[in-house]
Image 1 (tube, rainbow, N blue to C red):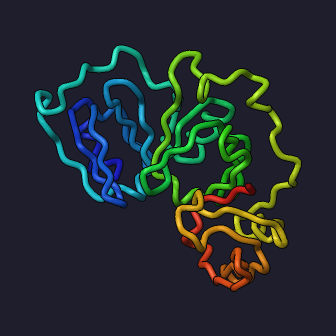
Image 2 (image 1 turned 135 degrees about the horizontal axis):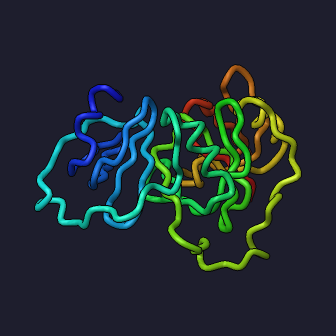
Amino acid sequence: MKKAYSSFIGKAVTVELTGKKEISGYLIDVGSEVLIIFNGEDYIYVSSIHIRSLRVVSIDELDIAEPTTGPQLEQEDELALRKILTSAKGVFIEIYLTGNQSIHGYITSIMNNYFTFYSPVYKTMYISLQHLKWLTPYSGSLSPYALGKDKLPVNPSQLSLARTYEIQLEKLTGNLVVFNLGLQPESIGKIEKVENSIIQLITAKGSSVYLNLQHIQSVHQP
């Protein structure tokens, strides 16, 4: 990807992502796992595994001003996803996973295949690395929903962290959880068991639903 797209750095582009989403702006930098795009207001760090296509467009079609400052999450070497997430740790950001909802808050920890995220709305969340489509750092001194520091704790959860996503979900066995922001009725319930990447979830009416861990983008406790 890096070799294919590097010649377009500085040009106006439109990137189509999985889920029929598009981002347009100036292509700022290209790495093996991340593209940086400036959309006229913010720098957007796009995970390359979700890119379906990239096309160059005319500057007139784009109709946004070129950036006057550099990206906030600077990288001295390769633009790798884990390095970007590490740079973003503790920084207020917006992240996008799926559907039409983005999540606002900050990264607290980065594990093997997931990271923990604190949202003022959803509190502590466990998010799969493979489902992160993009992140956007806040500019200046903005905070989510203009909240004060007392509403944005430094250590939001006391639950110990496992190295992998599946084991972390096992730690939540017996607890009521919300998967994927609760966008589907069968994504809210009590975890009964996690085994071989299959999650047995007990719904509100007591029936069992068996969910594939590979399709779990985010988990939080209500």
